[in-house]
Image 1 (tube, rainbow, N blue to C red):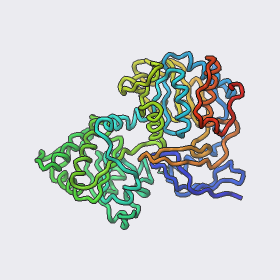
Image 2 (spheres, rainbow, N blue to C red):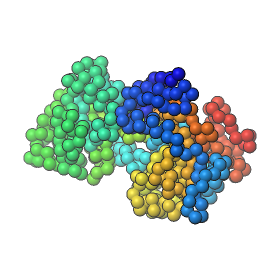
Image 3 (cartoon, helix red, strand yellow):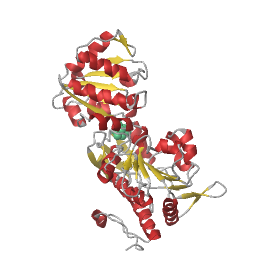
Image 4 (cartoon, rainbow, N blue to C red):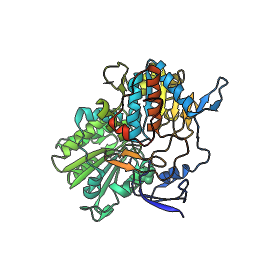
Length: 458
Ligand code: SF4
């Protein structure tokens, strides 16, 4: 008899929807139906049924082909490779659970690695701005229940976070927003007429790369000063009208995305956005939020800040203390300067999403991919180790884009013999300890872990 599981989390985008319902086969090995998820989330769950999912690690052979090998051999190779490297780079973690992020830290410390996550090519500039200027933010529940003016600046949730507008930002009827969309004024600030812009009441189609000027103009108007007739391609009257709307809101919510972090100015755009939010708080209540991309990309920021004091670009190669300096210790910069001699790709696809020159540098050295699926990074790797899919066949904690932790559950049984990221990292760490004749450092919680410790390590 098929079973319906409710309250399931979707492991795809930063909306981290936790109201998904999944119908699974009676033996709990197949996903039959997915309800409530958007098309991306639905596809992700169904993909878990794919009979061609890898079940064994694959290692590149001298003739260039990939050959399946047992997990023990893959773990041994990875442990030896990490220990031999002077400065390995461990990168990714947008798509795994916090348990995996925590477990990898011991490998990173033991190998003197640089530990980095996808923020480095995504909302890293937002972190830099937050360090400089603070983060007057809130939870998505606040936005749902209170926001009567919603600004999407350089983001397109209709494509990137498909249920964001229906769960949190435009359509839901909240405690103080009982009329839902009717009660909200939506502004879209984007050089393109995106599907989000089509939904908005006002679309400011600015010149691409001129966000900083426009933020400045908003602040200048808000402070009662004059601005040129046109700023960033937007007429003065339109800017004044938008500022009036934001100023007269009961609760103004600014969501921003790659349109701000990937364009000229980068972190300075976010600096200006945060300053605008501050200024608006002299008139009304205003909050700002980064549209974090992956369902748990806020996770490494939380877990590693707790472990090392830094959210990303963490250089542990000194052996005595962690050091963070994006530009110096960020993945793409390290790769472009050819400063790392081993690359570990975890829960992401650097093969597809890094600049090609960076990939070419990384490919000169051992390249290890840890991922449940075949992807660009697995196909160019020297070693590909399959793991379970967090949120589908492995449970765990994830942090939503507003840094609210959610316990995701497993809905089907994992593939036999395929470990979770956490288990894999623990086994690699144990092997590193064996090879160096050192005692593993375990957290107390490890004594209660779900799988048995390697009996070879007491
Ligand atoms: S909006 Fe994002 S988290 Fe929600 S179902 Fe779609 S992909 Fe999944």
